[in-house]
Image 1 (cartoon, one colour):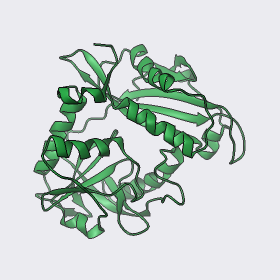
Image 2 (cartoon, helix red, strand yellow; image 1 turned 45 degrees about the vertical axis):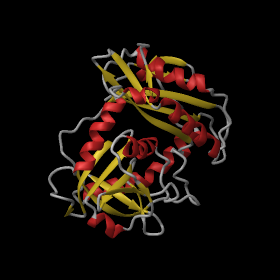
Image 3 (spheres, helix red, strand yellow; image 1 turned 30 degrees about the horizontal axis):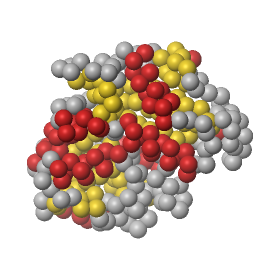
Image 4 (cartoon, helix red, strand yellow; image 1 turned 90 degrees about the vertical axis):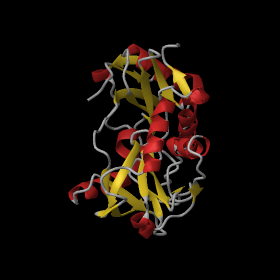
Length: 305
């Protein structure tokens, strides 16, 4: 289900059903596209919609295009305007997930280059009433920097996570965790992972075959500035997951999702999120909705209030 009646496509706002690219494009045939998933949050008291950390997402999109050797003429101004135009044209006044995609539209072989198109769409934010999810450690291995670099937010990379999620659901889980080629925790499909062990929050380093997540960077800062914690970036063994006090996933799409069990081993009570997870959830949602003035620089207002 989409929120958008209009989609930004190559410089124009077009009706949703007319936002198309050719089946023979390199983006379709070979996954030659990179993207950003962003969130915007509605604050009814402010009567404002805030896009969260839009400049950082644009920086990462530029980095992905560089690593994919995509020659383009896209500017920071256009990338910013494309997101704001979609939200304004669709008169969005609710929480949404935004996808901004740069793709090679030309027909060609594996090394196809050519014009880079830009598409932006907005969809409703998924809301769950569950206190947390059950996950399993996947039999699939996380892709590595020397194969399909996860530092690039490339559409083709997400087949790795898709396989893990299909396996997880077949096994009765709601999510998955992927280990890297060294047998250490990497991330979940579409999300980074934090554990809390002996009261200390920890997360795999950016060299553990993870996406350099904007949300992960946000939480590392909030742990220090708002929760008085000193988070650690280090390698995490599979068995540490089972011994952790708390585990949660984080990302623009997943926001902060508590994990209640791993491979059917309960974490804490196995019934509710732990105290640090709950504290971070409350802090994070206050920040993204503009309720903490110290972090207003992370927010881009859509309607200019």
